Length: 437
Ligand SMILES: NC(=O)c1ccc[n+]([C@@H]2O[C@H](COP(=O)([O-])OP(=O)(O)OC[C@H]3O[C@@H](n4cnc5c(N)ncnc54)[C@H](O)[C@@H]3O)[C@@H](O)[C@H]2O)c1
Image 1 (tube, rainbow, N blue to C red):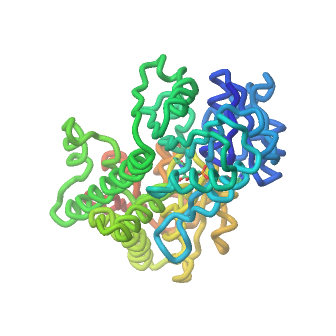
Image 2: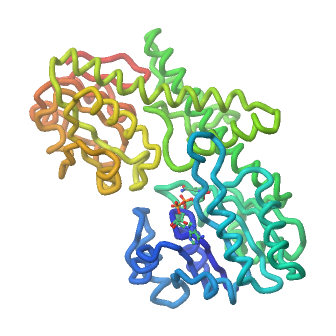
Image 3: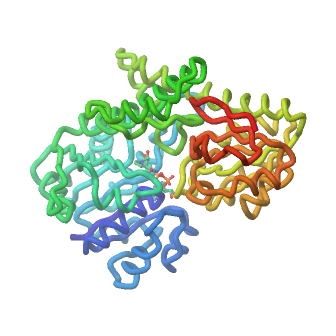
């Protein structure tokens, strides 16, 4: 089985590496020559736990190659995956499908009869049919199968998610497409992974509905956290007990500074936009989107309030990636929060174990620090934004001693009140009572 992967970003690279690990012959294509060059010499282009090892092994064992030449990859492929980006269109919520259409045109020019073309990118309902018709028009009479195969991996645990997904969704129109996809995912079915075989449109909808549902869940618990703060509740207890209910589930019930990343914000916007366009408004999703934007601004405001109370001008930010174990900062809450602080004239010192290189370009004016200790030194307020393991067991007495002020804002509820006692810190978290040092 030969696989071509068009687009070698987070999804394309992880999928390509994992398919090669299954034993398939995989050629990954990217239009960015630097990405292709680095990956060819076994250098990872993204931070993802476990990726480096699998990349090296499969390149060395000649199951995985990288190229900028789409003809080289598509020529001998049984299945061609499209894993290019579908960012939000500028000024509107809908997904920008121009990369998908460009990839489709490039594939059409070099495809062979009988190939399966599978869109892995997250795309608007109807896109697979549009791409199918576009390729048919470009290559009349050349048979191929169109398949929608949305991806559900999470950054930070992408390899594990790809290898052990909750389900594989295959939207197909013919038996050939379904059969080839069954063969591609056979190693997972041997591990009893359920496969949902459905239509192209359903597969597209399943992906958006899943992401939007999780985003709504996050916004819901954030609102409950706000209420807890007003009525003297503790959102940790509330969320834990809610999560024990099998109908609700414990995942994505963690209050925080708002959701971010390359998927939730753009996918909720896209689903809301599809709903408006098609006459079925997704009001819950629209509310989650609006609440999330407001939440990031509220977080910045909380920091400014504490800074004023301290009478200081320096804030330490711990963590800028949108979540731990990734260097991805796309739509990370930290971008809005730090942007607002800089706008207000605050001196921002920041640290992140992996994401500083990416963040540096987007956040001019920040003093990037070599360690968490450097960041908190001289700060009036310390803010824990991303719950990296490295920040989970900080010596809080040392934090307090290094700071110029005494306020810590823990936006991920990493610490418990018992751990704060005696450190001299005034501690503010999410959905719980504050502790005055
Ligand atoms: N990142 C995630 O966690 C995740 C999870 C599930 C689904 N998705 C979806 O998967 C898709 C890809 O997301 P991503 O985060 O991997 O994107 P990305 O931006 O990291 O990578 C896209 C890559 O495609 C390349 N590319 C664009 N056009 C190309 C072309 N014509 N030929 C060859 N290469 C081309 C770009 O150079 C880039 O390297 C999106 O639709 C996204 O919504 C992402």
